[in-house]
Image 1 (cartoon, rainbow, N blue to C red):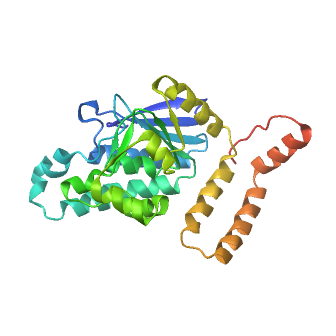
Image 2 (tube, helix red, strand yellow):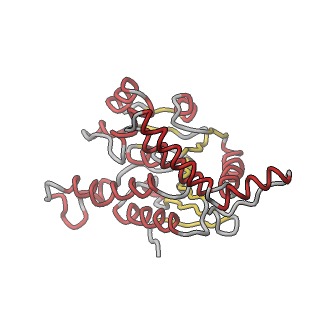
Image 3 (cartoon, rainbow, N blue to C red):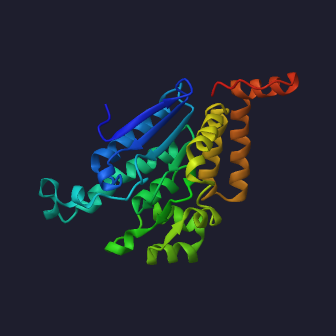
Length: 266
């Protein structure tokens, strides 16, 4: 079904991981791989058996950004003056939309360099787990482009105007630890611990009350534009919706019965 990504399934189908697997280009993004990722995230979002989604890369890199040969050479598309707009509109924007509105938590497992669109692919995920040897670079300015893949929306919100400008203008590489200190990465592990520690977190996420996480994501997304009054009203609405889920009932019963909850994600 997918030609450009590998899929792994764990924990009885609760977790699905998509691996970019073009190791000869450090997992550079192509139109087929962008389409595959978009379809993968969308299908996981709608699949009731999937509780957590992750994206990673095979080999020594997470993702080196857009494959320029794919953008400008195939089918003589370099003669089309609007090819960049088409790639952004038809391939990147739909992927960003699917990741940000996914009903399940989306975790980036950054196993190596994350550059340009590859860095933003990680940073638009719900949170990032990174190996200590990895780095992040907004390399768009190095070839005369602006941050895309949601970069102009998220970077100022994640970093503030000064630091977003600095990283976007200079293309400076951030080590995994630097990225964590700026709030871009949730956890950093050494190479030996990266896989087992990441899987521990993903297993926990796969057994959390997924419906509540979906509603939390929705509330956070609205907070960018809402007034405090609007956000408080939304909190009330979404909290009521959460209280009507099976997971809430299970959580309360487990607390009262002093046992571990068995959440179903609904």
